[in-house]
Amino acid sequence: MEGATREPEQPDQPPQPEASGEQATPEQREPSQLTPRQIGLMVAAVSALILLVSALAEPLGIGAGGGWGWKQYVGTAVGVFGVLVGLAIAYAPKRAA
Image (cartoon, rainbow, N blue to C red; front, side):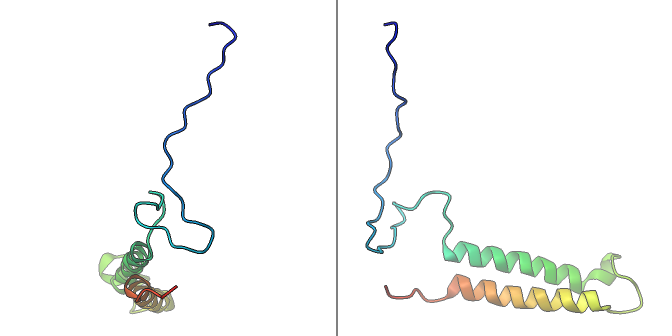
């Protein structure tokens, strides 16, 4: 069959929500999309890591020495704020459409 071209096969696409503003169901959501709960928990986890490193800088040997410095205060405050925001995102009640 010379000269014949084959069109590439397209994988089956899941049905997409209509443009009327409907939310995608878990079956319709693309695998790469993260849920708000997953995003919130990731924000909280990264912030907790920042909080721990900032608070434990002296015992870990990465502090400047001589007590807490301004960077430790800022890192700790950012970490606490991030954990609270992340948990608020993760566990916020779903809004009605």
